[in-house]
Image (tube, rainbow, N blue to C red):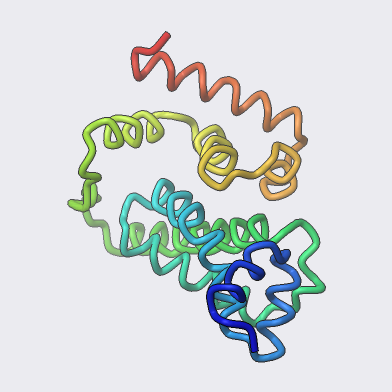
Length: 181
């Protein structure tokens, strides 16, 4: 067995798919590396769409649980894209549940009290809220999740040029909203 420090350094250079294979063979540390690689970007993506840290954390946790049980050989477009896809589907499902609940039990929606500590971050989040949903999602997937336009296109089921256009329009609007033109 390799010393822990050497083993951790070696795992950092191993692909996500290989780490997941190792995890399925019983190496729990391999999954920790995958988690460390993708959790913060996934949490930021989910947090930006949900506006509540606790819901975003639940989505990230469920996304990783599903990754743990998924066959790594069936992941075609990369682990980060897979995780974003799972998170997106969970968020859409939650939105549907909330819409049904709102129709049957109307309650005034309030913004979460869990506000970011940094005023600039709050300003950015408020500006993101003003974007059309498809532009906001494209920006979040591109910047926070680090996906390519092709990966975003596959995930959102539109063409890569459409993603690029959405991104460009969103950046222009954000620049205007943030007063940085």
